[in-house]
Structures are given as structure tokens and as C-alpha cells.
Length: 143
Image (tube, rainbow, N blue to C red; front, side):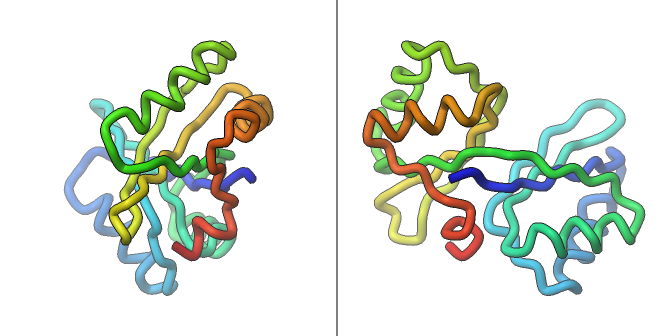
């Protein structure tokens, strides 16, 4: 039920993001979803891709600093309150969200929220107990 995400540390200068995406394009790696956060000196590009191992290898071969991280993908209806329904349960169960980002599925009926939890195993257990749809990595990589 866990998803592997790669995080790429980029210099905060023109061309860094283009270089990373070019490497992925040339390796025929499809980006399923992404998030980019920045600081003064560098950015962190977080990606869910269709081939985590290949992306990790080609990026490192091209001088990028890359980490793999476990995240959890949760599907919710794409309507007001979708995120709140999850947050309410997580708060009651004292589960901390370190960060999140989301995308809407092609149908437009559901959203998928990518969560980084301090305790992913407990979060998955709680989410499933409350009948939320936790999306396995294999499905997410192929969306």
C-alpha cells in the first residue's frame, strides 16, 4: 500500500529543473505527479514516476542527489471536504502529516492526495479502518 517517491535536490538557478526533466524524458520515464518546493539556495522536486529504480539510476548517473521516500496515496471524491474528511480522522488518531500534494484523476471524479506521514504504517491502518481508498504504488505508477 506504500508508494515510492523520488526527491531530487536542485540548485535554485535557471535550467536546473529543465535538466532533470530532460534526463527523465530521454530515459522514457513518465512523471505521474510532482511537487516542487524551494528555499533560497536549492529546491526539492518530489516525483511519482512510472519507473522509480530507473529514474533513481539515471538521475544519479547525471550528478543529481536523489533520495527515495515512502509516501501514501489516498483517493477521495473531488468535492469540497474531501481532504478534510481525511484530516479529521488523522487528527483524532494523532497522526502527523509532514507534507502533502495532490492531483485530480483523468475522470475528474476523484483526487489522489500524496501524504508523507511520520508513521506510514499506522496511517495506512487507520485510513483503511475508516474505509478510505489507499492506492497501491503499482496502480499509481500506471495511472
